[in-house]
Picture 1 (cartoon, one colour):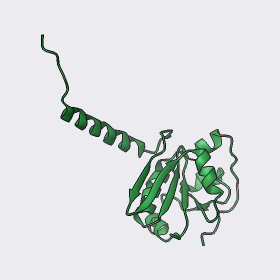
Picture 2: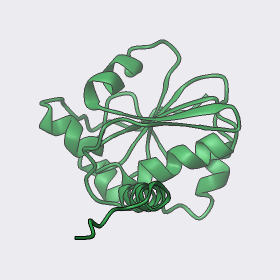
Picture 3: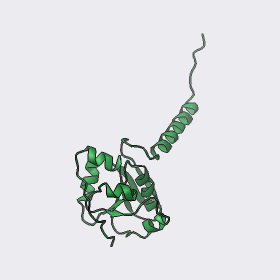
Picture 4: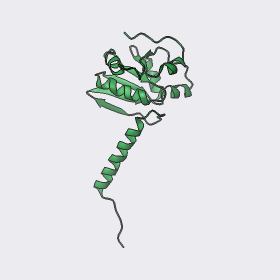
Length: 156
């Protein structure tokens, strides 16, 4: 009787395809509760982080907190100390590129999809240290953390 087997080469390609499909699915706008990942682009760091690590990063002096949600979402409440650049702005990439590159950028949206894209844009623009809140403000609030209703912080 012949026993079927999968070659090492086939296993490698199947694993690569599965990894690529999973990565593409994670870039969508839905909730993301995946394990943190890090990617180096042009010598910079782009890292997805859970709520607890995001909070610790927020406590670091000089960190720039950035909300990229819509105007309506901003009005519903945001993280204290956040600057605001809507993802749908026609000049979104230019606004991100103009942000100071001498400090870490902590970016979030509603569920992590738009902010993951913003993180990659910031990384491509040469920002050396960028962090994305996995699960976005929804994960933040689910963890029992507050939101505020204040004006956005001016970016300096």
